[in-house]
Image 1 (cartoon, rainbow, N blue to C red):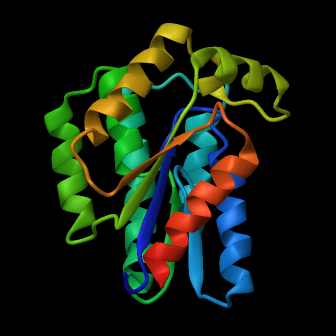
Image 2: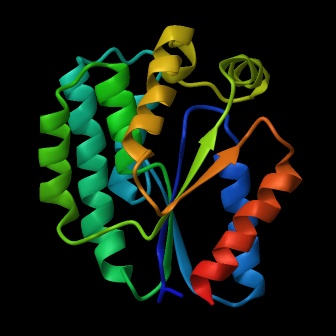
Image 3: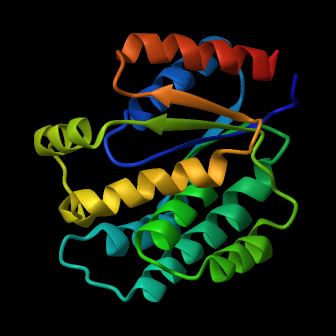
Length: 204
């Protein structure tokens, strides 16, 4: 259906995005399809350094500083990874522009116009082909945070913050036709089947 789509995985903490991305990667490898996998924050070498700053539990940035660090990471990824591979390989991204709106605008209160302007400058003509939005109950999210081995400063944000963020995802994505909602309260295998079926339609 699409020649080398750009596929985004969005959602709050502990929705199982990383697990499902691994499933997609294994699926693409079996089919011998070329792809790259990027995460935000992180991805390129410089972006991974920025990731360390953003997620450090001791970091306490002003909300605008926080936004600009994310945008700096995105700029590195776009110019060093995405543009080189756009429409040449399948691109998988763990969090992208909708996470910025959900976390920085709806969660932290940064002006939406500022975020949209920065994204417009950075993205150029890059557009996501499809978005997998992983939703989860806040109760399940908190349980999973307690059980995971590696924590970051976002794990300390309160329940109200994450309710705002998840609601922000719904608001940002509600009118888009290229979205699949993944209910992360369900089993990993059920969601794996849902996602891979959609992936097959996107790449055939």
